[in-house]
Each structure stands twice: as C-alpha cells, then as structure tokens.
Picture 1 (tube, one colour):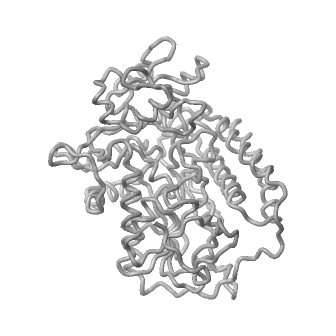
Picture 2 (picture 1 turned 90 degrees about the vertical axis):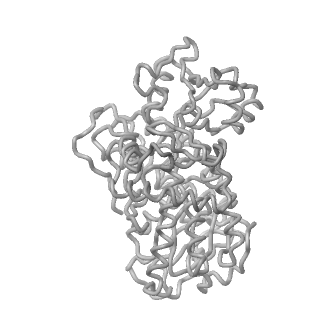
Length: 537
C-alpha cells in the first residue's frame, strides 16, 4: 500500500505539498490536491494507525426529509455550550451532504434502507442523521481513502515517519525569524535517520492528544504531536481544556481502550447502577436520560463510580431483540462474545475514558493557521465547530470539510506561494545514544496518571496547580534528556505529550467557570461571558 520514494529527494523539493497524517483529514486534502500537485503523505507508524480507523459511530449530515441545517446547527451549539463559532458551525454543516456524496463515490459502503442511506441517532442529536457502516464506519472510510490515494500517481505515502518539528525560517541556510513553514523534519523509524521533507505548503492533520491521559479510547500514537509542533513553531492554540471523555469505554482488565459506541445508547441502551439496578440518569438529566450530551453522561457515570466506590456501571441493550442488536453492532457483539459477554442477554460493564481533543491549533475557515505555509485540519485543530463539547459524529465531518478547505485554498493561491529556500540538515552532532530508556517510560507513565487524577472529568484549582507543578519539574528533565540523546519515537512522543499536558493545564486554570467539558468544583457556574481560551506562544 505504501509507495516509497528515495529519501535524498525530499530535501530537494520533489513534492509540492506535504501532508502530515494519513487519516480522514489528511487523505481528503491529499486527494483534492493531487488533481494538480505532487503530494507527500507522512504517517507515524502505519498508514492506518490514526483515529479515523477507530471511529465506530458514523458521520452526521442532514439527509432526512424532516431534518434541517438549522436543527443540526442548533444541536451542535447546544452540545458545545455556546462556545462554538456559529460561522464555522454553519460552514461545516452546510457542506456535510456533499462530503457524504464524495465518500459514496469513493465506494464507502454505507448502510442503506432500501434506496436511501440508513440514518441512526446519537446523544445530543434531535433527529436521525448519522450515516454509518455498521459499527465500524471509520475503518470503511479509512480503507476507501487509502485505496483512492494509492491509485493516484501524484500521491506518495510514507508510513514509519515520526515528525519532530516544523522546518521554519530559523532552519534556512540564511537564518530568518519570519516564521514561514517549509515542511518538517521527520524520523525514519526503520533507519533512525532524520529526513528533511521540504515543500511550498504543509498541511497538519496529525490527530489529537488523547494519550496524555491514563484511560483513553485514542490510538497509541495520539500524543499531541501536531499541536505541540505548531505551538513550538509559534502558532496559537485554543480551548485545550475542552477534553471530551466518552461515557462508555469497556471495563476489562485484559482489553484496554475498547469503545462502546454512542449509538448503543442511541438505539435504546440504558445505564444502570450495577449493584442496585437503578437507572441513574433519571437523577442527572430526566428529560434526555442516556441521550444527553456526552459531558453530562460522562460526569454522571464518574459521580456514580466515585460516590459508591464502583469499578464500573452497566450499559444494557438486552431488552432489544437479539437480531436487532447483532445487526446494528456486529463488531462490538463479536468482540464482547470473545470476552464472555453476550450483549443480547447481559449488560456491558463500562467506564468513561478520554475520547476526543476539542481544542487545538487555531484555524480559520480556509484551514489556515497563524503560520504562513501551514494549514491544519481535523482533531489537532480548534476550528470553532465543537466549542466546549463535540456533538457525536461531527468529528469525521470536520475532517472532510476542513481537509477540502485546506486543499482548495492551497490550489487557489498556488501561484502566489514562494519556492522553499535552502534548508539546513538536521543537526545531531552534539547528542549520543541513550542508555536510559527507563526514564522515558517512567515520565510517560507519570504524566498520564497525574493528568487522569488531577485534570480529568471533574477538576479543582488545587488539583490543576499540582499538575502544573509536576509538569514544570518534568519539563527540565525532558528538555535535558532531549538535548543530550539521539531522537527516538518514544522520546519525541514524550516531549510532545508533556507539551500537550502543559497546554491543557494552563487552559484549564485560565477558565474561571464550568462550561461543557470543563467542570471545576471551584467555579461550578457558567459565566454569561462566552470566551475562548487562547494561548499565545
């Protein structure tokens, strides 16, 4: 699947555009750009290692006769607790049907009801508007996009490339502080060499920062690389305190990070106290119950677990016909049967887990960042769509719309983009091989634990300050280590993980209210003033 190119050609500007990330946002942009330009797609690990392939639920779009754009906009704004940018919300939602059409043309086998697409419903949505491929939509989308990209003569895809830092004017042979992005330095994971990937335009689509937490549904590589790289290069980030926790991750000591999709509750799944059998959502949101937005459901489960000393709560859909459950959730059904749980007859033990990074690199409606030469799309960005809480199944949609926006903007202004200057090679003349890999593992584990305990679903100022104190101590350690030893993927990820943690904690301390995903016991009320948390490097 991966087309290789000679590494010595990268520094010579063989490619017009570099795309960092091989998920929905990156490949959508690459396919559009490849109609005219030569594109290099870089991926850490495998080309299917990102979050797109993990998405179970689906893609939200107004396709039902009784639904409207206005309804979808309103649902998105309500879920986002008013922090969304209305212009961005309208921009994305109005382009959703076109995005679905393009995916159908690429061969994504969406479920159908006779002649029309089957639409399911998820928490926070007022109508059925989720198109899906059973309960494995992301994998089907990833497969179709990769197949199309592999067939394009203008797209070269390279897995096994861990991006380290953006190449900016500081890395020119003739130094400049102008801040233009000319590509990226990336570690070849197989050879250990650091390569220069230089181009006129770069698109960042590197995913979120979920692995900063001990419990997360995000893939192993979601270490905030893109957000950290953009911050170090001088881009603003926004709303990093808004980390979404999925209410229902399977509780199993053997299997980590297996998500039980939102659609299980959308199709009638109910939450119960595992010992008393009490349907506890009655106490938290009596009107919407299990279909309340994710932040409400996640906090309710967290409260039950902490108040009653539970390990998990029960999610039960066994009251639905067995064929209905198997037909709607074949992937989940088979996985659970392998673990001895028959979801058609018994409840599923679930706990909340970090699920989505709603904040990120600030972008406009053209997907432009603050840095000339750098565009961004997907989970690594803060586009204004999600606000204080992502509405279910709006995430893949954002990838398609902003991936397309980035590509369209680059194509429109291509003739105006300057040619890259001569760029210095990566300098590793003052470093040596590390003999203390345990330092990386220890620090990684420590970050994820204190972030879970101090910067989780419910926060306090004291806990946040404790986390900040730990981050300051670890920063000195990691910076010293990074400056002394040859880079490895683990070291690059640790550096980025710590940077992402710092941005989350700084943002959380700056918000003196509770809104959406950010709930603090010291400021439980929601302010009348709606304001983004914007950090400037």
